[in-house]
Length: 393
Image 1 (cartoon, rainbow, N blue to C red):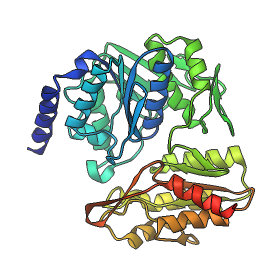
Image 2 (cartoon, rainbow, N blue to C red):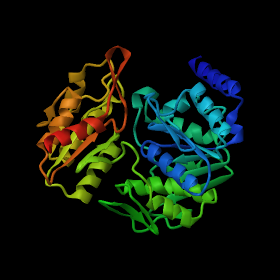
Image 3 (cartoon, one colour):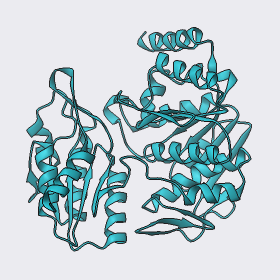
C-alpha cells in the first residue's frame, strides 16, 4: 500500500510539472560509492563540450552554472522537488540533466515518470542494509533502476556485480574497466599521486585511484554523447575539487564523505600512499537513527588498522544515544569525544608538521541531525580550517 502511495506521488509530481524529462536527455548515476563525484565530472565534461547542463547530487543542485547547496539531507530529492527541478532545467534551455540516483529513491519510486536515457553503475557493496532488509534487496533496488531504463546502460566491468547489471535489457550496453582491454573504455597505467590521478592519456586533479573509476564512468557517457577526446582531456585536466570529497581544507587536513567500509579504506590507503605521513590522525563516527549498525565496528576496525591515532565522535546521531554509537565504533585505544567540533579541533591540534588529518563521515554536509528531528547548521570544513588557523596564528 505504501509502495502504491509513493508511485502515485511520482505520477502526480510529473503530471503537475508536465513531464519535463520528455524534453531533456536525462542521465542517472547510481552505485554505493562515487555517485556524487561521477555526476560532477560528467556535468563538467558535457559543459566543457559546449552543452547546457543541469545536475542534482547529494552536494548541490545546478542549472546552467547556477548552483544551490543540497541542504535536504537527501541524495535523490522527492518527486515534486525533482520534477520541478527538471522543469526549470527545460525552461533554462538545458540539453542534459545528470541525476544522482539512490536506492532509497528507487525504493520510493522517485525515478518513476522520469525518462532516463542512460543508467550508470559505479560499484556495489553493502549499504542501507537495515532500510532495505538485506543486501539482496539493496542490490535489487539498484537493479530496478536499470530495469526501468531501456536506452543505454553503462557498467563498471571490474565490479563484482557487473554481470548482474549487464543482465538487464537495453538498446545499448557498454562497459569501462582498468583490467579488461575489450571494454568500451579501457584505462591503462592508473597512477595516483599528491596532485591527482592519471590513466591512459588523461590526468584528473582529484586524489585517489578510485577517482579513475569515477572519471571512466563519466567519460564513457560523455564520449557516447559525442564529446571529443580533446575536449574531455582538457576538461578533466582543469577539473576542480568536488566539495567534501578528498578535499584538502587546510595543509594536510582533509575532509571526505566516506561512510561505507570500502570508501573509508580507499580514502585511508590513498592518503597513506600518496602523502606518506609520519602519523595519520583519523576522525570518524557513524550515523545514528538505527542506520546500518552492522558497519559501526567495521569502520572502527579499519581506522585502527590504517590510522596511527583514532578519534571517534558524533556524525548524525538522530534520536539514538550518542555515546552508544561511539562505543560501537571505537576500537581499543581510540579517543572518544562526543562533541564533533571538539574532536576535529583535537585532531588538528595534535598533528605535527609531517602528520596528516582526515575527517570522514560528513564531507561538505551543512546539517547535523540530532534528537527531536532537529537539524543544526554544520561544517566540518569551517571547523577544521578555524582549528588550523588558530594553531598556526
